[in-house]
Image 1 (cartoon, rainbow, N blue to C red):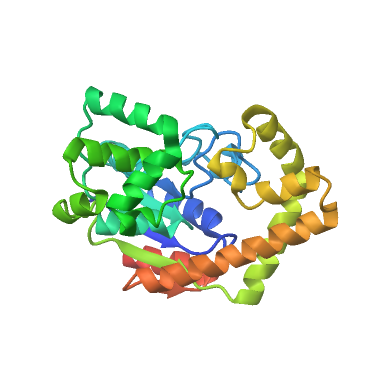
Image 2 (image 1 turned 45 degrees about the vertical axis):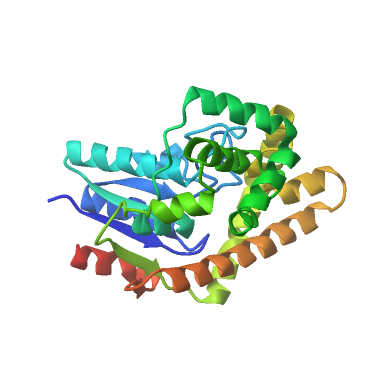
Length: 297
């Protein structure tokens, strides 16, 4: 009988090794719940498992797009559906694991289905996007509550809002009010690694040191040469600090310190999000969680 579970926890808490060990014992594939691991060529900064570390386990949600391409929750849900289809067709189970809790929350709560965009609307939107600021102001005037959540230079999300507005004749808020979300996943057992703050900080510091030793500076040089600094992923932790180092604003010691500090801050935000957004989560220390999961699935 097909089974699927989710493992959530802040960055550097030991999720990767746990999930791979479990995948062998549960005969499962893994769906990565990580917004940075989805990018090809961002290997060290994302701390994605190497092919050797994946140990023959099929992974989804890793190395899907290039750094200058967009990726959003809709595409993640498509990736989940592909992973589930593969698992079922091959008699396997599915483990969803990672730190990007927003993706998991969106699957549990569901998303409103966007309207089918006609070629005529697409042309109209592309024309409007030539003046991005004017398009943003138009949408802001029509739907302030929705557009306040979108940056005035976020061309991707402005485009999506324009498509809804021009295609449906409704503001995004009106459209989503009339098209309520449908859950993508139900009755999911969610497990969380319970890690003490001081231990997590030690793990983060060790991982950061390894990132620098493994060549994050060379990786960021390659990324900047090939994609510049505009893609959203170039503002990620690890990358943005390395760019500061390359600009000569900080030295190598400060680089390591800043990545560790900012990663710890991210881990705190992830913990807060997970506590506030997920109910009926099974918490356990890392060393005991594998046995707990195997006893419950």
